[in-house]
Image (cartoon, rainbow, N blue to C red; front, side, top):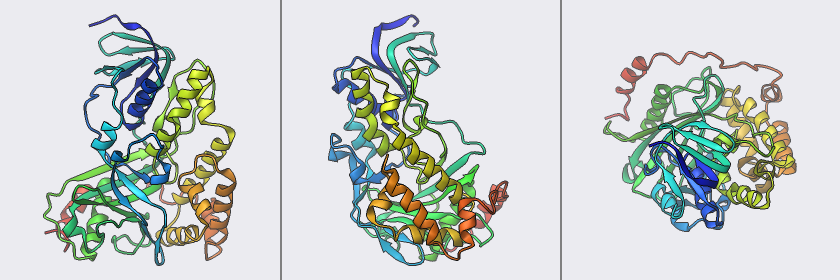
Length: 403
């Protein structure tokens, strides 16, 4: 078909990932005329999404939570429990909590996205007073990147490392087989609420990221260290995306990037969904008032927070494993407000500044602080050679944790 859809919507949302679906859902609830565009709008999302429970907006149903962890564990030089409830979101539960009844949903790819017009692949044109682009980001290339490889393991098999109701937020124990002269990575492992636990080796801040074959090798090494044997056919997931997408410039009359495309990707943690959900109503309220949604979502305090976090991800991407452990050990001694300012708060710039300053000041030995702030080893790990995937795959099959 070709032509126009309707006489013009209040908003058109391009992309129906969790953030786009939430935006369309809340806009309908606010009484707006909504058109949503996605090539496969009925497809359930693939990635695993997690967050701190206190980040979620009050309007979101508790049915969106699949698994709750009251005090996740961080391993640096020792075990620490973070007394802040954490959760894994249910893909189906989150989907069901964001119905699009009342919206016009078009199952097509957007070919052109302009401020008031979206042209679809078949030539159809969607007119809207405001267009939100929530399609995510392109491949990172050499940018600062989050990379992860996750293996889904049955709860009973995972029990030696992660018991029901528990979770490893950051595990820096020396169990992944990486040497001191190799780029660092840590383990993230949480129960998903469906009888499985994900073990996900993760790298943050490297230029270009860490390849999947290396992350998988390290994950298998960790499991083997705890006597966990796998069949070899366990499902897995991969993540590889940029961390440095800046907030858009304010100004009416433009396409509004939203979600990871709109600067809501946390530069240090790689989290995006909870912050985006929390900002949905801010954007919609601004629209209804005739104000600029970008300016409403990104006041100067939030932009300053983003700038400071980017300084953190630059530092994180040039550290060794030993330095990373020392830095995180220092950070998790900070008071709860300062921890939250770095991990999740959108605009608490005073607490974040104190957190970053004290984390650097209390990282020992003293000379490592030069790496953190970029006075030395600014380009460490750039163009690091991780080897060929075939070599890693062959050696992985011989690991004691791989049956």
